[in-house]
Image (cartoon, rainbow, N blue to C red):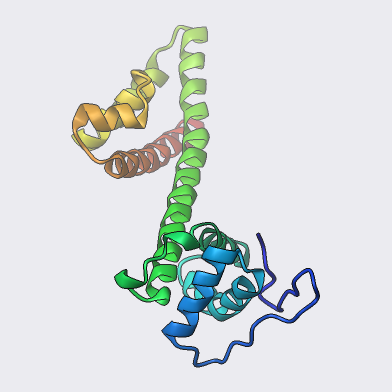
Length: 212
């Protein structure tokens, strides 16, 4: 369910949304969440959206550098509020705390996806170079290119070597490497990203020297 933060929706009968004073307190917010949970009240949701939208966008803008991602954080956060309003427990904290926790989790998930996409793009960028060098070595009976890649690998820290060799040469998944090395998945991703950056730089320098 999407609501335009620039305005309020009317319900099917055409009535206006609940008025939202700027200094609304937690009791009023709680009533809105309860109305959503028990009645699937779209007026209450629209009012809650209007209250939180500028606050969520302001925080999201400090983490993401484009408006599309900021709006995605807003929409996903409020969609979860709509779907899971029945899980809100007034005894465990304020509505603002609950909503901001949802927003934080949504933001972290998006940041992980952004980082994973960067890592995939870097991987796609470097390994065609490596495969080209190996293919040329096979065609011309010259193993210097392959040796060059292995030489570059040997220059990496041991912990990064293990991740690269496991991922690309042993064809292990990042999850398998994490289990095998008894490390968090995030650590595996980070080491792989750093290793690929260094390899790309080294291979690029070597190619420039060879062509000069």
